[in-house]
Length: 318
Length: 320
Image 1 (cartoon, rainbow over the protein chains, first blue to last red):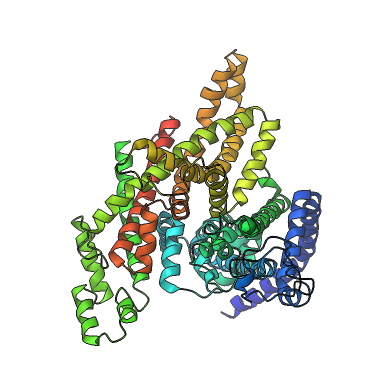
Image 2 (cartoon, helix red, strand yellow):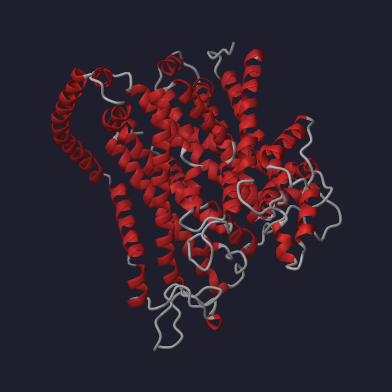
């Protein structure tokens, strides 16, 4: 027993030395990846757009106080459906994107919508990656009945059309807007889980995993210190490529009235009534603006994701 | 082959029961139910009346008991009756909606294949040509555009502005009888919208897999022995390039059926999606179960078809 713990301590000391060496190397690998990423103009443009949108989202309150000078939920039915760039009189601020069916300022709502949509998407991806990584790691590392159980469960979830499942969960649980992230994640973690399982199956057969086991490292340590770091770049790539889909899902749910509930603005629920005012000429902006923002954001995320994939995992390059 | 199919069918059975289990306990996990609206409708309703109604709907039993009752009904091919529209069988409700959903998704699938395969082939054969660049842009845009927004834009352009197609529905309600031409006319926009989103994805995939095959030795051999280029492309290359695509096709079926949910809502297409929607809001448990079952059966069946197509396209694969 004593020998084993000395051995484990010794191995831990060794791993720390190796880890220190490895971290030097990781930095340079990261640098290499960053250099590759920088060369990709589309990816850089996408990252730039995202930085701007994130800044808008974070600063939504000061922006609405000092720049647009409108409250996102201030209703003013007398001035509904006003066109882009409308100004009631020179004393009041301009409605740059016009007003919606209740006379609210569209630009302000778009900015607050960015806050809601981006935050939900970010949270969803965090949940998706956590659930997917843990279940995939357990299945891939332990194999046997654990693997069978998790893999069967994934097969079952994949056989129900995702949107039907989402419809069910969101109607039954009526989640608040931050709970939506968990709901979307609960039907979209299976891809990451399969990926991580595959990575684990490949890595757990390596010699250094056997070596770690021989010196008595506990399973959790092997999983998190020895295997996971080696599987991290495909996980990052998969996560970044999933963000776009998550944004589309969130906006679609909110559009259907199952996601973010009004009056909280979301890019999706801003389009919910779009069909009703499709005939109103001056309200065309209401139709185009939220959709364009979703489109540009997803495009930017996808470009960035592709760039990340090429930078982190050059083998996967098309 | 028959043996393989049989085994796959057997494998699908536990998956199917897994779905019933998860969905059943999910929709029953939250308090409330079809009777909670009764209290909203009439605040003076007596508690014993609510209890009586619950008992008549079979809701007084525990959830596991109800699950067993549901399963035994399922064994007899009985999906139960709606809790809201009393006396109407769930199978009848689905039987009414399913053909309409199948018409929409089937047409969209066919349309998407007819567009995506030639586009992908042409892009691969003429790599980096103007057409290839155009289809790259189209695919990139198609992957990022929200389907519901695309559908609204389609309505704006082709129904509101140009007035070529109706804005929604399946038939013109002013007409007394159903004409096939009228249905087709109503089908064009929703089917095309649903198809477009898949074309964007699939034509990239076919292009990539064509490019992979085109570099193979046997394609060079086929060319070297002087075969006509058309034969090389369509027989030697496309057939092999479609093999991995068959799997993708099977995998994208849930997306297609799920996508139909949004498209049906926007184009007021009276398919299963709207049934699912109303049933879920009213907590009409048997109808929800029926619809989710049906959607899942379609998915499982689609995957099975993809497997068959797989072996059909690739004679090297023999299932025994």
